[in-house]
Length: 484
Ligand code: GLN
Image (tube, rainbow, N blue to C red; front, side, top):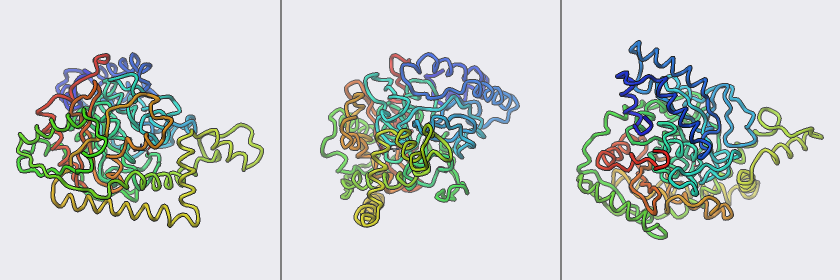
């Protein structure tokens, strides 16, 4: 059953080929068998899952199930889950059972999905390799000596290895798309404001956005339909109706104009990645898609601008972890200052501390204009580049990452090299646009991801463009041999 897509599983449930309890048991067994190798799950919620599956079966036999009723899935451990540990990959929250469900969790629960557990991630979503997690590195199911990408590495690895049919992720600078690319799955970062951030632990609030990670674009369409929508509890959530993302998946692509940002194809693009993309472009040409080279002249500034904005916002968001309210507290503090210093010193890992230091510096009096304000101005220039490009073409296409998955430990000593693995994804967050990654082949035995970028709230079109490609190819159907 784990080789099926979510939509196929949904059809099987509807036709009563198997029950949600059987399906859930199957995935729980796979988690029990493979999680030790992969380290993708931080928490497995077996009892909870079996009870939810039983309730879903009752709904299904009563005939009142929706498209996701009875489908098992897993949540990135950044989403608050009522009564279940929500660690955000950090020692700071290792003892934190969330007091409520995040809106995304509540929505997926209402849709009748079954929670299998919580997925490993980089600490507070800061990382590109899952190596900053308090719970240890996640392994890439295609190559156990390689990283799965990050920060949603647990989500990507769990889907790729068939431990869950789908998962949630969050993307502040690439954390859905980059791990999706590294693990050969499909992931969508929606337009900023499309999916509620309420109960999604904050990293950089003006960039963070939750989205689906699954095998196929069709599965992402089903997931996004359940996750998206206005939420009065999130002031940046946009009040716009949620379309039926599955209704337009099959639209003909003839006449579609796709832009190839020339900056994405210059420089240090891995030759295997370039080759896989060329083949994908050829596939689209057969469907009548027209390609045009475009330019995003300020794109080279996106990584430096991001590494001022994201740390600044994180330094402010993470101020709440003080040992007073919730989370980790150091042993026997001498006084209040000792409590703060040791709680934060002991509770946060090295990368999180690095970001808090950079952000606090950039926001301090006298430096704010030189760094944060300047970075925000660059952000506007980058958004304007995309605006101009998307006036000429419908969608942009390029690589998700410059190389396929790198080795575990290969970049941990060089933060800048690590940061550059998001060079093609970060600008999309700065502009607030939707972007997705889908598998388009292999380089050196490792999956290659292709990125599609659309206009604001044009998720339906991205899913349509991805789905048509997936109908003509089968990269999204491959399973790593060890987990087949
Ligand atoms: N790798 C980037 C960072 O470390 C992006 C992370 C993310 O999207 N959450 O900030």
